[in-house]
Length: 102
Image (cartoon, rainbow, N blue to C red; front, side, top):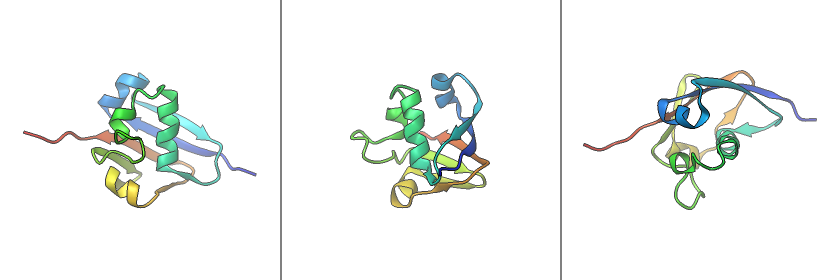
């Protein structure tokens, strides 16, 4: 039997343009849930429009320019590609995005 996981998702401004809200609550019916699972679900909900922000061109990996904060820990796309980050019930997930350059 799968347990429901309740998450609070907080969107940075670049993601608010696609989801039209600052934050939302999600319930996912998965016993073992990772950040990658969440990103794939959000991509489906946005009809793939956020894919350039979260995935590499071939969608096989998370973009290194993506930053995700789960509760008090921050993960880069590179870190997420190396180790799946599990999500627990009542986690707060912030979708951040940074742009570098001068």
